[in-house]
Image (tube, rainbow, N blue to C red; front, side, top):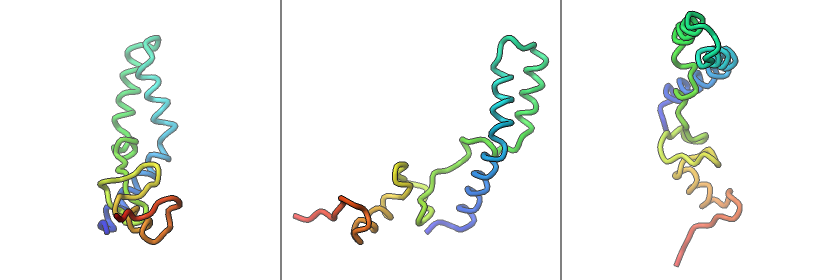
Length: 101
């Protein structure tokens, strides 16, 4: 089980990303548009860098929904390999069984 503070910190990042997504996208488009003057692009870049760092999407860490484990994460299922194994052993994942030979 991951530390509760780490999981909460990641959830805070998710909320910030959602909150600032539109503003960040607009400023990013301004900075990359070559038709706009250099001064306007530079001021947009300064505003973008003044935004909270945790509002960037790349700061989000993929974590298991069940345990909060940050490593060995299956994106499609949103769980770690250990949680997936436990669910499979309990018969909670359709079509997946524990191998035996």
